[in-house]
Structures are given as structure tokens and as C-alpha cells.
Length: 228
Image 1 (cartoon, rainbow, N blue to C red):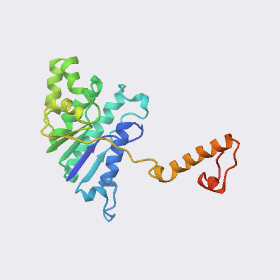
Image 2: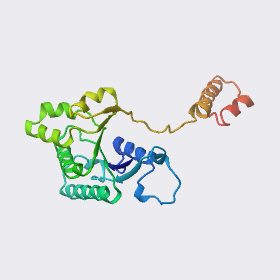
Image 3: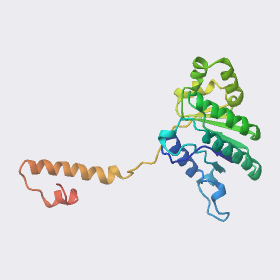
Image 4: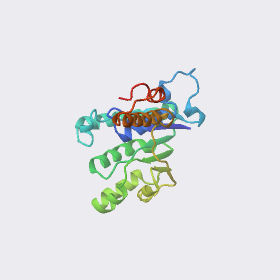
């Protein structure tokens, strides 16, 4: 399966961009940047070829959500790149992260889906932000709600982070909804085996020192030689 990943990776670094980066790495990275003779990667195991359009609109966290005319030009360029990938590499699956309940982000979605979605056979939504469905029903006019349903509704697959977000995704009537929770690599996988025992040994050693007792050779070894 060939997948067009229309989402941005760090920088700027935040939860959504980091999860996109992890997913991209897990799928073997951007196929266009790989050598044809390179060894198989994780994505190859699942039969997925990933083509990434890095849709970075902001250079800093402070710029996220603000309107800048230059962002429109960048977004149009990204959309044209996605359409080019569709025909150049035969990519049929379009992956997109919908907007939260915010007008400027919603208009961005309209532009992207109006240009890109007609060219792809299957549309995949990954809901990192919740609340759009209820926001559409309570905070915008009927016209905006109708346009959103026409552009973003009926996705072939909607991915949500927990079962509590299913109702929000179902507002746009997807054909299928599945729950895939976020997760990051353990920054200290050997904590229980190595780090925790040493910390406990150092805590016990300090208690002995505060009580005026002398540490044994075993105590010094368990603490790594530095109970202080």
C-alpha cells in the first residue's frame, strides 16, 4: 500500500509533530529519500510505502495558529506536491490530521481537502485533536458546517486516540473508526534493572551516614562508589 502522509514533523517540536515523526520512522521514512538498494525497513514488513509531504507552516511554537499570508503560499505548494506524488508514484491513500475547533485551522482543512482529496481513492483521518464535531454543531453557521461535511466527511478510515474521541470522529460519518493510542519510546528502558537499585542503595547509604554509621564495601559497590 502506498500512503501519502500529509503532515509536518519537528521543528517546531510538540506532541502532534513528534508522533508524526515516530510514525514516519516506523513506516520506513519517506520512500523518495531512500536508496532503491537499501535494506528492508519496518514499513516494508507491513507492506506500506510512505511518501511524506512535510507540511510545516510555522517555524516556532509561537507562530502556530496565527494567520500569515506566507502560510497560504506554503500550503498551496504542499498541496501541489501531494498531487504530484499521486501521479508520479501512484499513491492512492491520503493521510491527514484534521483541525481542532478553530476557524483558521478549519479554513486550512478546506483548502487542503478541496485541492487534494479528489485525486486520491482513499482518505484517512487521524484525530490528534478532539472537539471539532461538537464545535461544528454549536459554534459555526450552517454553511461552514455543510462545507466541512462535504470536504472532510465520509473518510475511509478515522483513527482516534481513545474511545472517548469516537463520538467526535463519527460526526463526520467515516466508513470505519479505530482506536490507536499514542505512545513514545521509553527514555530509560533499563530503569528497573540498573538505575532504580542504585538509587535505592544510595538512599539507604545516606541514611547510614546521617546516623553516624560507616559504609561497608558492599554498600559502596551498590551505590556505584558515590553515596554522597
